[in-house]
View 1 (cartoon, rainbow, N blue to C red):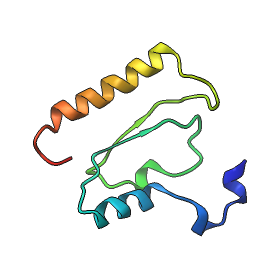
View 2 (view 1 turned 120 degrees about the vertical axis):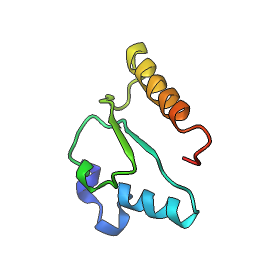
View 3 (view 1 turned 180 degrees about the vertical axis):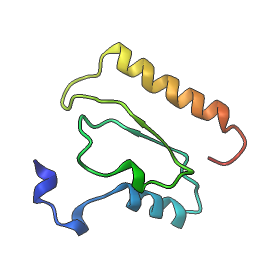
Length: 87
C-alpha cells in the first residue's frame, strides 16, 4: 500500500487536518471516513469535539445509492444540529 511507502512527514493525518483548521480559526466538527480500512489512524486520537463517522467505501468504484444516501444523511443531520454555531 502507498501509505507504507510514505515517510511520516509525507502523510496527512487527522491531526494535521485539525491543526490546519485551527490555523484558519475554523472549528472542525465532523469527519466522515470514507476509507475501506481502519489502519490509517486511531479514532481515539481525535478531539471529543469532533464527530466521527465511518462509511466503508471501496476504492476506485462509484459508491452505491445506499452509501451515498447514508453520507448525505450524516451531513444534513450535522448541519441541522450545528446551524449557527460555526462548525
